[in-house]
Image (cartoon, rainbow, N blue to C red; front, top):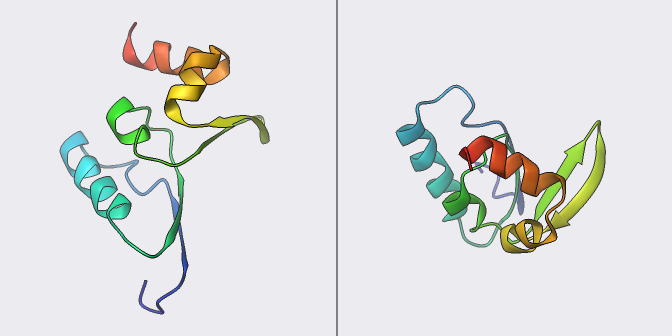
Length: 89
């Protein structure tokens, strides 16, 4: 960010934070304009994930799904299962 880069790679930036602070950090990242953001996270929060243009789902180091939050939920595949387990549905 100091070098005015066009790409920002964030790897688990909120992993050791409480939920409130994690939400503030993610909100700040998502509000950045004019920059491509690649965010690696294990967070499965519907309201946050709906704000991403695309979600890429990895399993054993391989891309197995990609799409918007709504598309991945509609497809009812691996991401759908992860979401349901994490949200207690």
